[in-house]
Image 1 (cartoon, helix red, strand yellow):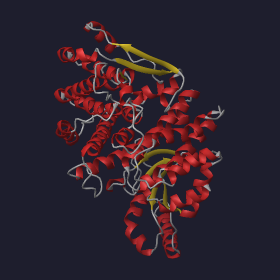
Image 2 (spheres, rainbow, N blue to C red; image 1 turned 90 degrees about the horizontal axis):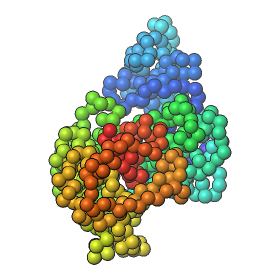
Image 3 (cartoon, helix red, strand yellow; image 1 turned 30 degrees about the vertical axis):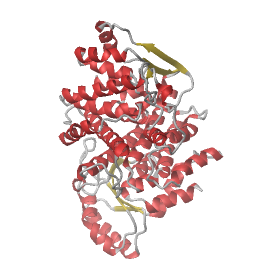
Image 4 (tube, helix red, strand yellow; image 1 turned 45 degrees about the vertical axis):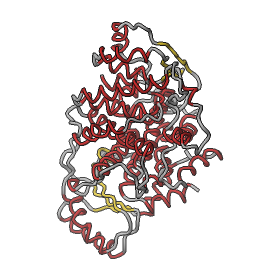
Length: 523
């Protein structure tokens, strides 16, 4: 079955879709991938820069479909640049490189004749010869790379097909993706680091095939969610087995690159549009529209934070900040506490961008709504669902399309208010907090700590320490400030080292929105 899946995926993929998975294949074959392009005009025909297993620099150009004479004429300029322009990369001195053309289609006989003539002339000019990898060879490489790490149990196969056979326009089902990856990555007794590395590589390839309907439909948000789950489980496996970074880092970096590409495309799409409507649904308004706006702006804010944490010289995009500023007053709707991280990332980005007024306004709004809806004196019996409930689940319950949630069950406890309070404290917002404290003191805050650190990185941990505490009334400011200023604790070391990934992780895993994680975002 898997061979047919890979073949179908490869035939229907564009070069941007198969670029990251192909880099993973190269890694399995012994290449060290150094750089992936964004397919811009400044790449000089080099979509991938790598070193082969002998250390020779290699430049790859990826194409989609069969290459005939007409296509060859259209791409000849890029081929010339691929061959003649030296690789421009800091770790590579100017030297001869391998030039490799890759396509998921075939190459016609007359084009092969032209390539033979081209190589004959290039040898005389002491230029690299053009190597060619076609669809048949590419398919064989992908099948070999998958190895023996395949879904075998009926439930594993069912979970894989759940994604692969979907329409691709649905919202992400992160919980089932987590179940699939948990079976694949964590439900085994492998301890050999090299075998674990191959397992990680295979998981990236399998997820690439599984989520193809979403990438094909340009469903950026769902694709990003699935890739974040993949990145988190790769990190969980590394944390559990204390793997050195050379065994898991290259695959994780490919996942990060893919996420960044998807976020860049989402950002470009949003900036082209005048609103957050989806498709032709003119009646797509109300709570669904405001929820989508919150989710998209949360992801765009996380992208800006990701870029900022990766490069301190990065300047957050003023257009994104303007979108947050313009939309915040018009979308004051919290479907539940799983919405908190989406708003919080916008607030944290605003604070990092020196717009303290906007950042504090968003945090105050969150605290007000949570404490109003979930305090023990709430008489309307409509509490905010905890962060384990997604917007889909909450809205479906509100509209009566699924079994109705017992909103009263959520009153009295909040899982996300404590980190918000800590953010206000760190910003020295004592007056604002004092005004809110009467309501805050009428509810408890909850925190869950899995029994071992690596389980913070998986979707659900059944073993751990559930803490529920009441707020003091009156409350000592000194005590609040001491708590908020404490260094983060109980955090997986690999997640702490990958700060750019953390904003994305908290959006996909809203039930991990705890003070110790949020403190890292502000540190």
